[in-house]
Image 1 (cartoon, one colour):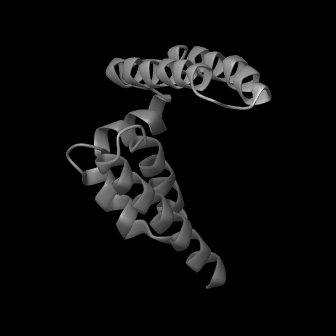
Image 2 (cartoon, rainbow, N blue to C red):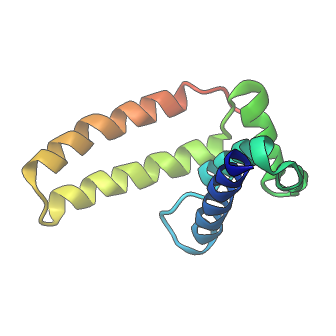
Image 3 (cartoon, rainbow, N blue to C red):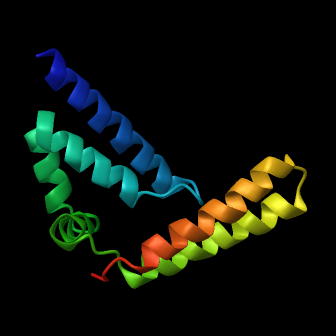
Length: 119
């Protein structure tokens, strides 16, 4: 029972963050919905079913589950947001270690992302 509640809590938190991502630019929606569906499959099957049946986000969740596919539009958007983050971290006051860390980490994330198949 406690484990099921923990899965539901994770699913709820992820769903809430995904909903915020719809409203806030720069906060992704789909990754949080992927986590919500994953956690829902373990503790809240009806939530998972609703997410999979959603007309907008359901196909993305299905493509990710079946082939780890990411749509090209999402790749471009994520890459643009990462590039703008790098530009801002170098133009605004920030610790030097953070600038270096992000300059190394974000291109690796972009490389990983672009190596995923497309939906």
